[in-house]
Amino acid sequence: MDRLAAWISRAFVALVVAMAIAPAANAAAPASKPAGKPTQKPAEKIVYAHPALWTVHGPQATVYLLGSIHVLPKNVQWRTPAIDAAFNSADVFVFEIPMNEAQQKAQITDFIRQNGLLPPGMALPSLLTADIRKDYTQALAMTHVQPELLTPMRPWLAALTLESGINNNEHMSTDAGVDRTVYGLAQKKTGVTFRAFETPEQQLKLLMPEDQSLEVQEFDANLKEMLSERAQVHELLSYWEHGDVQKLNALMHTGFHNDPRAEKALFENRNRAWIVQLKKMLAENHTFFVTVGAGHLAGPKGVPALLRHEGYKVDGP
Image 1 (cartoon, rainbow, N blue to C red):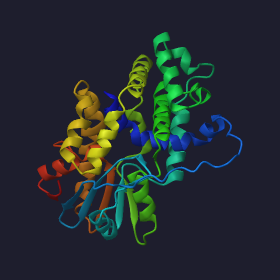
Image 2 (image 1 turned 90 degrees about the horizontal axis):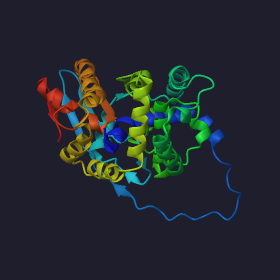
Image 3 (image 1 turned 120 degrees about the vertical axis):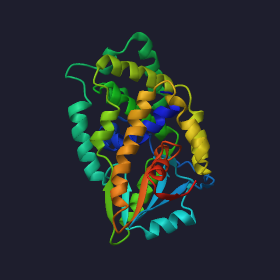
Image 4 (image 1 turned 30 degrees about the horizontal axis):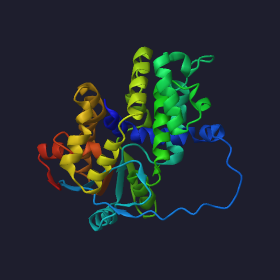
């Protein structure tokens, strides 16, 4: 898949993996510069976004669907009056995976311990050809990720760690992402509960090839994508900010034209599994606020379209 599709599919997993490896990343980071006169950064202009919001009406429940961008610049303000009204009316908040940080970190750390590290004595660079090492060296320089951190990692985990490094360098914060913001605000409400469609393990397994030769090939492809197209990511953000669902869907799925199996695994199969859970929620006496990646909501294969096909009334784009 191309750079944009890779970023969409890995963004959320990259952010939760970054949480799990944060202590090691900090230990491997270069020493801070000596204290001196602080540099005054110019204030960033606030970007006012108007992301799309869907309302699904069921026999008992109302479900609001908000498409998330998992990592955002801190200057993006996306809370519109319609989104705030939906948020305030909800008593159940649903995410892709459980948002409790302690729970996430424990589960992901355990998964990485079992599936993310190379056998003792083996190093990531030893798996790479001379050409792949050139791209690897460039990616390290671009992301400022310390090579010592990546050396014991399997290629799939190293790719996610580099992805997180790119987001950090571009001042795209996981804390500013829609998921984290919604969860933080919902925690301040009383009488609410939280649910999730998947587990961290389910998401990580989607990005972890079982065959090592295939894993190295995908790592090579990911490196090349990291070093090339980034403009499309900012184009995607612009479409999301303007609530342009049609353009977002068209751009987002361009990268899957040559890899329909990846699209099926990362989007279609998961969307249909979520529909099964949403149909049960729609029969409950609750108001749900669902926050999932924007890629899962746009287009004819998105969750809103699938629910319309099932006969539910869905208001929105």
